[in-house]
Structures are given as C-alpha cells and as structure tokens.
Length: 112
Ligand SMILES: [Zn+2]
Image (cartoon, rainbow, N blue to C red; front, side, top):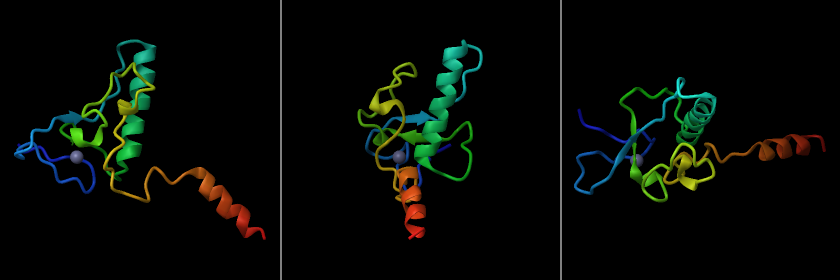
C-alpha cells in the first residue's frame, strides 16, 4: 500500500524521492490513565481541526513531516509545544484560522 499524505492538497507520498516521515493521526488512549485519555482526546481533536477534512481518518491515514515545524509531532505530554499538532502547509484557507471573533464582529455590524 502506498502512503499518501492525508492533508488536503498535499501530494507527498511515502515513495517520493525526498525522504519524509509519515505519522498516523493520534488515537484516543483510553487505558493509560485519565491524563493520557484527556490529552489524547484533545490532541486528536486538534489534529482533525487543523487538517480540516470532512471525512474521518482511517487507521491507515497518515500525514507527512512537512506539516510540522520540526518535521515531527511533539510528545503527547508536551502540550505547549508548537508541534503538538500539525500547523504547516494546511492549505484550506477558510479552515481553522477563521476565528469566532470574526463572526461576532460581522454580527455586530449587522445591527447598524
Ligand atoms: Zn503532507
């Protein structure tokens, strides 16, 4: 099976001549304590929000190292690390960066 990056618009494949690493979407770790469960749930949610696809990843969905500042995801317990979730080359502009503040402003403007 050929691994293609799961990020929308990213065409990197595991068999490209450039050596890249591929990382699976984090799964929720239910049986390793409450902290691990909470963190892993949050991490999975953050990854999916950042990647911003409509469909749900399969067990085989992977994303490539291009989406991490240091080329690899940070440790689960390193919550404040910028690579805790992918942030680079996520091409959907209308995606996760659209903040709630913008929406509030638009609504406020309509009043006038
Ligand atoms: Zn990619």
